[in-house]
Image (cartoon, rainbow over all chains, first blue to last red; front, side, top):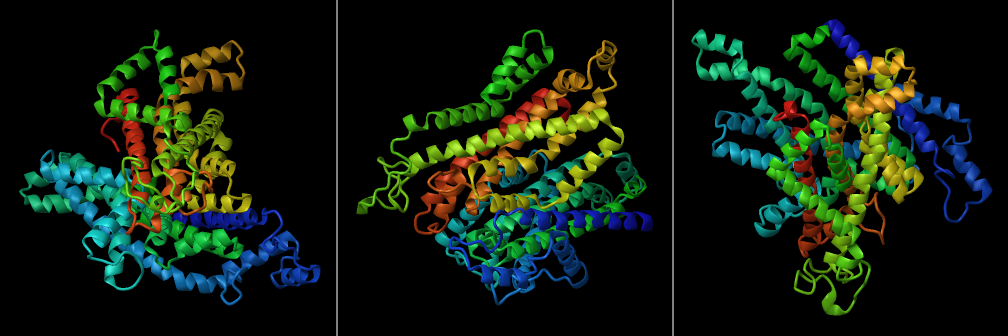
Length: 306
Length: 297
């Protein structure tokens, strides 16, 4: 297990290295440069600005400076558009909001997905199965902004249960979290259902039944453990999807999160903010995949010896 | 999709696999209905100027024309500039469908070539190529599409290139797997023995035989590409006005969702219907071409 952990841990490094390198060089492909405006700046001003941001140095030097700042000081540099805030300030201010929405969505998707999947499997081909299958088909095929619009129309506009948009207490979380969670809840429902049905008739479950264990013990201790594996391995892609989806949900629900900030930076061509957020998200994703692999290896010992 | 269908029909003569698949597909009601709706959407997109009752950019500021709810004159209502939403949704289908299909084909071309070469050559090259694809796979690709859009400007061509450049990896993997399982068959030996070149073996012998699963995956890739286009356009990073797509129309309706909800509902419904149909058709094709995959996720 230790060797496997170490190997998976070390495998993260080249991925992160590629991510930072690609973002750095891709953003330097921009014709003109970050300070080219419709109206050209005076030569001297431009040179001063470039000096301040080290843009006058050769590319390889800038690259090592950028890489070094990130690796050793976790510093993403200044924002090119906002003179007051650095990229770190922006990330520190906006990431927690998005993180909260994302984690809540993931939790809701996991809890409801497992519950619905379990019920669907136990009541297969009866009405609870049909209801939950219908709910998940809708969640899988609807675009996120349609899901969010439906929630806003029903919960906010017609029932007046929650505010339409904005950010604050619990009532503001309901729409964004439910819309973000729905598609992943749908997948988890399907994965859980299929997993339980596949494991229900395996030999080891029959053994457990022969030993005289109660049905609920068999279900929780034996069937569920086996059927959790595909769900766990789905959490990596689910996290990635929720991260990307947060851009849409934050924009439709007016949430001051990092997804909206990224889109805004893309509009303003604020290069350091774009690279900074990309690197942070990519890192989160890679770490998440690592954790998923670890849980996976704990649940399924076979994977360690591959 | 209609191209694919015709292709299959022609190949039906004597090729029992495709004939069988075609029969199985016709038995699947949901897939047939999905296929008909997809064809209908394609016809609507092709003949948009004939079908649309108004021009998609005809602005009408006469007071009673702005933000009208659905009526007989304007079945989907009008938007904030008094434009007929029904016509705009019809025109929007052109961009959404074009991006779905063209980008799908570009991704198909890249993925099949890449996967076939990796699978056929094998060894070190295969390992390197697949490792590279794996790293790309683990990146938050939407961010890179946005990055590309920022750098090269938000134009139509970049939208194709950007989405295609992140959509080919799964096709490459599937192709590679297929090629690896096929490349030791006798017919490849036979081709080798009569002196066929590597390229000829890959493109004339191996790829045609691996086509089944690839076609299936393509029909499931197209809806996801359309979804990505809608996602980008919804954020304002995709198609630019005066062009329009379902995602962009929904984005325009976003701000007035509580006052004029039809402005987001109808483009959303159009996209949803198209995605549903494509998914049903794709799943039907999968069951038809590869029955062993039935009931799997």
